[in-house]
Amino acid sequence: MGLPVRQEMTYWGVATVVFLILMWAFGDVILPFVVGGAVAYCMDPIADMLERWGLPRLVATIVISLFALILCIVAALLVIPLMVEQLLGLVNIAPELATRLQAALSDRFPMIDDPDSTLRQSLASIAAFIQSKGGAVFQQVFASAISVLNAIVFIVVVPVVAFYLLLDWDNMMGRIDALLPRDHAPIIRDLAYQVDRVLASFVRGQLTVCLILGGFYSVALMLAGLNFGLVIGAIAGLLTFIPYVGSLVGGGLALGIALFQFWGDWPWILLIAAIFFGGQMVEGNILTPNLVGSSVGLHPVWLLFSLSAFGAMFGFVGLLVAVPVAAAIGVLTRYSVGRYTDSRLYRGLSGQADEDA
Image 1 (cartoon, rainbow, N blue to C red):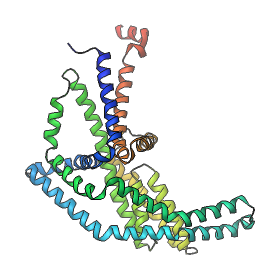
Image 2: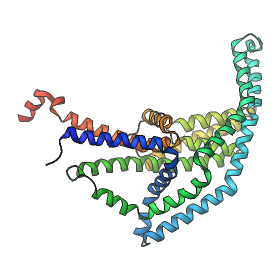
Image 3: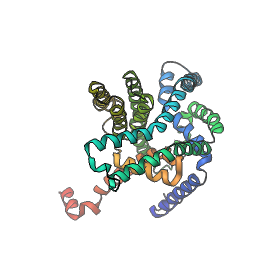
Image 4: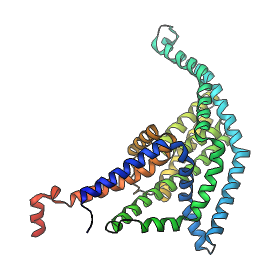
């Protein structure tokens, strides 16, 4: 005979609270393990595919690890230094861009030349802030990231954790399944399957979309001759993980730079706009429907809220677990709504009478 529902809810509630407290207390410590687990989760389908092709699990894991190592080396030697250089250049030129923006607006809005006007004072304040604080903000961001991640330990631990988790992933899932409460195992398996389907559709699919769009934007903008094209393309690709944000931020930034760089040369400005328009057409009609799917169930507003809430509570670790937790909460909410609509609380006596009839 199973435990009473109230007692089970008490146990699961205590377990959830303990988990949240541990994640909050040991966030920095468990960060490499969370990242390693996320990498292993994303790479597990590839390892399974290699196994179906006849490779042993160990060999498949080694092949994936070597390929990832080669990509990291290429990025460290070729892409990252250029990206950092362009990012610093973009920060340094920001005050000049603000000044040129003020001059362009002065031609169209003469009231800006009035030193007492609110708009002129606002623009002057923005330019002064960017000039005095822009570089310091980025330096503090990089310094904080390095101190939080503890870069050396992070770089060493994450690949090791990812390797061993990927190697033992199927056995680990089997052991977890064996520990499920027998009375509730079928429901837990079904909910876990739905959560995995959402994550597989969104996380793996959206990461692929981010990489494809980021590469396309970076290469296309650099070929078009846009200054800081690599950084803008990388920012647009990274923010594509949040629906609609990547295209808005990347497109706005690219067009802003293009207006200052190609002012008067409208075909080049239209080319920059066409690059982002074409990227969004491909994303909306080809990439997202095929790689992400339409039944993910993660609304952009819910995704933004989960990222903000978990990032504020648990820092960088919270950002990493926000999407899985949001997916799990979404699945549990839909399951609860389904149980509610089937219950007498929702259907009432009239619904019961219709069923009896």
